[in-house]
Amino acid sequence: MPTLICDFCSAPNPIMEYPCRSFGLTGEQALKPDTPVTRQGGFQWAKEKDLCLSSATTFQSLGSWAACDACHRLIDQGQIEALTQRAFAIFRQKDPRLNQALDDLRFTFLLFYEVRTGPPIPIP
Image (cartoon, rainbow, N blue to C red; front, side, top):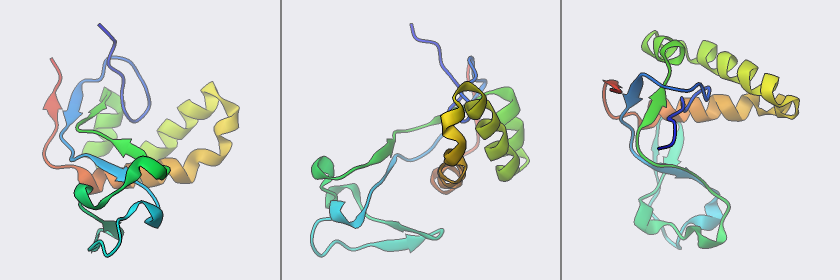
């Protein structure tokens, strides 16, 4: 059985699961013609049925996000920047080529707050 990891910093054995709705990031080229788009939280949203992802570059997040104790505490305190900096430092230490990933990481974690659907659930 695979080991669960924290979806924020990749630490093993996360302690909490955050329910989230699934989402994908893509460009306008992935929208079917005349797709209705809504704005929420500073982002544009379209229904899954209105996407044609087969020809577009995408990032997808499916379902809940897991968090280790340290990341859970930062999330619980609303410390999005501290969470971002923590994960960035860990990732950069593993691979220095990720120096340019800070803004992408911050954006991804901001999306987490947007798609979160409920309180954390302890992972047994």
